[in-house]
Amino acid sequence: MTTSPAQPFPENRPDHELRTAIVSGGAGGIGSVICRRMADEGYAVVVADSNSEAAESLANSLPTTGEATHHGFSGDLTESSVNRELAEFAGNLAPIGLIVNAVGISPKKNGEKIRFFDLDDDLWNTVLAVNLSAPFYLMREAYRFMPTDGTASIINLLSITARTGTGAPHDSHFGPFIPSTVAYGATKAALHNLTVSIAHELADSHIRVNGVAPGYVRTPMMGSVPADERLLSSVPMNRFAEPEEVADSIAFLAGSRASYITGTSLDVNGGWATC
Image 1 (cartoon, rainbow, N blue to C red):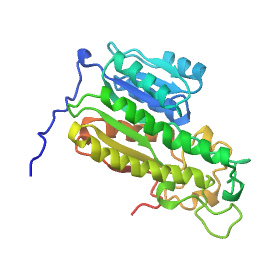
Image 2 (cartoon, rainbow, N blue to C red):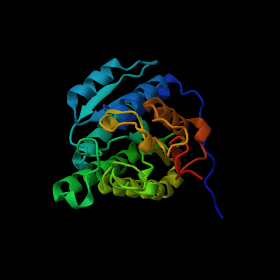
Image 3 (cartoon, rainbow, N blue to C red):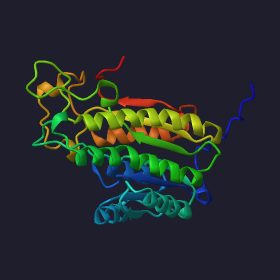
Image 4 (cartoon, rainbow, N blue to C red):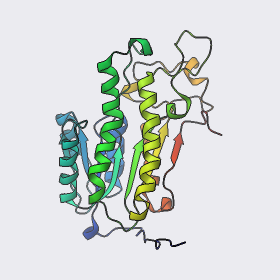
């Protein structure tokens, strides 16, 4: 069997090897923390978000290291042409060393689940477009701007729902008590599968593709959902994760210590539904 040669992974990239990091959904609750962490890691961060003001404001507030400069990019990320523009924009700044697909929505009604029979066509299609099509378009358009020396990485934000499905109604006698819609769980399961498939396709290019799958995270998306015992009873650590803990996991997968990890999902869920 013929194997591709191992690729070096320099611990510290000199300034002339500056890399960009695209974070889609970068102005969101988890995305903004990821952007800040990647800026700390020395990347030139492109904050991609539908909210232009928030994207620019966050980019301007990020810390700079060496020659790295940060930029906001706004547009409808569910459009393939917008993702093509995004990839070209980031690739012209410097080779794309990292893509983090943090874009996602989880619609709720007064903090509770929207039942599957109440999901209209528009909402169903919107969730699929944002949570699945947008990450696919960005990976498809941006991989060609990524170096093939073993340093480049794609990381998709997944969810525990990819494994468990979403929950029963809040007043049910059984769990899991996950207030997301079936559309959210279905898109995250599909994105998990897509992550593995693209990891296989990009392995010969030495571009690693992984996922991070959180459980409950303390973000505005969960802001209307109370952290009550009914929800936390499934979580051995008995608390929501902080966004920084998700960003730490992404930084690990993007770094040299994960140089032989691809096609996997790292659970960040406080022990919920693991082994």
